[in-house]
Image 1 (cartoon, one colour):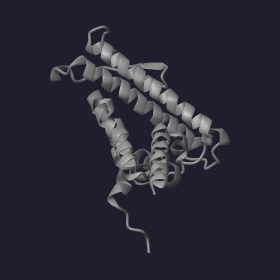
Image 2 (cartoon, rainbow, N blue to C red; image 1 turned 60 degrees about the vertical axis):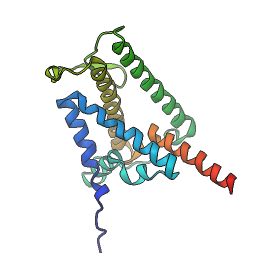
Image 3 (cartoon, helix red, strand yellow; image 1 turned 90 degrees about the vertical axis):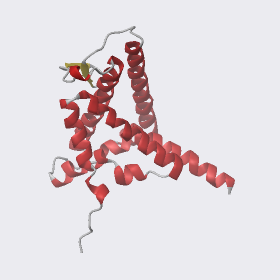
Image 4 (cartoon, one colour; image 1 turned 90 degrees about the horizontal axis):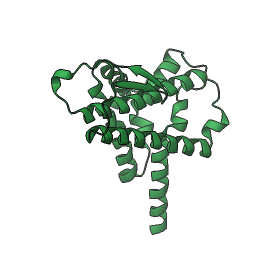
Amino acid sequence: MKNKKKWYDHLWIVSALYLILGLFNILFAWLGLLCFFIPLIISIFKGNKAYCNKYCGRGQLFQLLGNKYKLSRNKDIPRFLKSKWFRYSFLVFFLLMFTNMLLITVQVFVNASNLKEVITLFWTWKVPWQSVFGSLNVPTWITQFAYGFYSMMLTSTLLGLITMYLFRPRSWCVYCPMGTMTQTICKIKNKKMIDLS
């Protein structure tokens, strides 16, 4: 008998919708914060990686594209991508880029810098973006954060698609910064539980 799909098996739709909506209105980028806070909350309070294993729409999207639509070569992922030094180095790099994005947002907030209406791919290539929400009268710092955050989400999705094609569908999950962070939180939490018992 075929396993009945659960509601969370369709969260790949949320990931795809997020990327599409962000192209129409950059303010939808703020919804991506859920992908940051929910995994952290689950790992802190539950001490497990349920988000990565069940609820991550991005991982599901890669699985769907790679397996069902055969867009993956299904090759073994290189050992260096699995290594602890690479995963933690990528996490540090990711956090530095996130901090830089926050600093730029603060500069716009205090009027020390102008709004940069641009999506940056791979932290290098700037894609000019036409604002579509001028009539909403949104503060510029909110818009600036949206551009920065969407740039990070789009870049990480593209990295995931590249490694999905080159290797296995969910290769991104091996070095995903959120996965590394939640895994570290779970290890610390579970070690404390063992020490207390």
